[in-house]
Structure formats: structure tokens, C-alpha cells
Picture 1 (cartoon, rainbow, N blue to C red):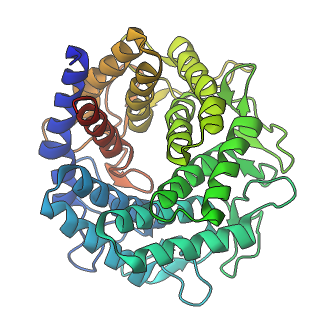
Picture 2: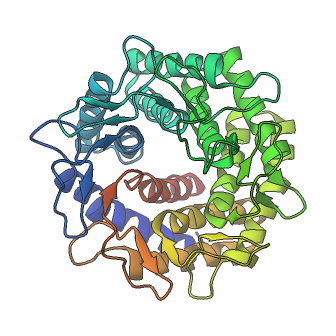
Length: 402
């Protein structure tokens, strides 16, 4: 076994089981109103009045279900059950289908529009929960969301999906998705998380409708969203897939480089694998060359036209770099990819993990100092990227040892 891979594995097991998941089980649970807090600060103190967000809550279903699947500890299954029961009871829209976007701290609906990105994570979490538990109800809920997305949020002419709908699923360009402005009709970010969600669903519901959609997702990503001249994703596009921004996101590029390969592998179709492999390796190579610092940190966003770049480092880009470079090493055998993966985890361990109070700092300045105003839990800051990083390492390591 490769010694560097073993070191990655050791880092992953230690943080996941001794820090990350224990922190979330201790500090995220709202024992007053049920579910999870909407915000917890850097000192592990909850804001008891903060709203509760679809994405965080759906990701928690995925995280603990996946942790149970990989690690087999019953306490993770208990958390997955808790997260699932809460989510269905409070976020599910019984009248129109799909899931609400925000609840208040007492679990009353605060924002009822249908956020496509958030509903993608609902599919992801519910499908993984069904995969782990065999729960048919969870699978049915996931499929109902897919049916709504494909009926209402899908663009049958140009392919792909819009950003948001009203509660009753009318496309609404004035409800903000992950786009900047209404002219960003389609975004790489929404499509990236739709492809992972549908791929997860395909694992447990391999029917022609889902398989065809997953295949289409993959080719839309490869043919419409990847810029094959630069090997980056287009960040924002109009309805016809014309770019509306020149900015790039190193984190999404490296994340997509392994998620698209995962989709190709789950599809199990040789032509899909061939179509994805070179594109994904080229994306990983470009991120390594352009966005990876000598000290092991991955940069955030950069605009090659204006020269503007983000003045901070985010936790999630580092997580995706670890997995993306590991994946590129597995595909190519090129040792510098494994070196980068390990170097990035070493940077994470040194700077992003809070070894004093537990959990992770979500953001650092460019010198590696925590931005202490950023909470450890809020919005999309949850154990999805970082837990998935460690779970991916553990699964890949175990597979290579068989």
C-alpha cells in the first residue's frame, strides 16, 4: 500500500471519528424545537433564533446516512434517522411537493419558494438514506422531487435546469437561486449538485427515466458547462448556455472533476467513461497548475479577465481538492496528484481544524488565520464537503486493499 495514501487514510479516520462528526452531534442539535440549529458561532454557541435552511438539513441526512454506511456505527444511523424524520415533517410541502427553503427557529415556514439547488440536496440526502436503510418512503420522496424538477424546473429546449420556482412550481427568475442576477439563467453550481443527486438516486432506483436523465446531465456538464479551451467550468450562463461571467471557481472545477467521473462509473457505460475521463483529468491538472498554492491551500475564485481574486480561503474547496487530486491520481497514476492531495489535507489539519474547541473554521485569510466572525454552522456550512472528503478517502483506501 502506498505510504502517502495510508497517511491520508489516517488523517481522514481521525478527524471524522474524533472531531468532525462528534462536534456536529454535540453542538448542532436543537433540543428545544427539534432538528438542528440554524447558526452556531466559532465558540460553539448557537443562535437560538436563527432560521433553518433546506441545504444544511438535507446535507445532514446525507452525512450521517453515509457515515453509517461506511463506518457501521449505530450512533450515526440514529442521527440519520433523526435528521430524516425532522426534514420530512417540516421541510416537505405536502400540497405542492418538493421542499421549502427556510423555516424559522420554531419550524414554521419562512420562505416557501422552491430553491432548485436546495431540492437537489434533498434528493441527495433522501436517496443516500434510502440506500443505507432500505426505507422505501425516503426513496419515494426523492423520486417525487425528481419528478417535480423534471416537470417544472427543466428546460426541454436547451436542456438543463432553472434556478428557482414559486411554491407551486412556476419558474421565477426573481427568486434568487445560486445565481447573481436574473440573467444568470443557468449556473454550474446548481447543475453540479443536481448531477451528484441524480447519480446517488440512480444507485438505488435504476429505472430508464432516471438513467436517461443522469446520462443527459453528464453530457450537458461535459458539452455545455466545461470550457474545453481552458479546462474550467463556466460559472454562470444564460438560457442558451452563453457565458455571462468570466470568473472561475477552482473549488467547483476540482469537485466536478471527480463527481462527473463518479457519474460515469455509476452509469457503467464505456462511452460515458471515455467521454468523461480526459476532461476530468484535464480539469484536475489545470486546477493543480493554476489554483494550488505551494503550502497546500487551494485558492477560491479568480477572474482571468479582471485579475480579481478572492481574499480568503474556504474550507470546502480544500476538501474537494483532496478528493479531486486523489481521484486524478487513481485515474492516471501520476504521483504529483497524490502529493497534492496529501499536502492539502496537511494544510487542513494545521489551519482549518479547530484543535482547541472542535469542529472546523469555515474560512481563513490568505495567511491562514481564521476569520472568527464566520460561524462554524450556518447556511451551507455543514459536514458535507469535509465529511464526504474523509468518507471518500476511507472507501477508496478500503477498496484498494481488497
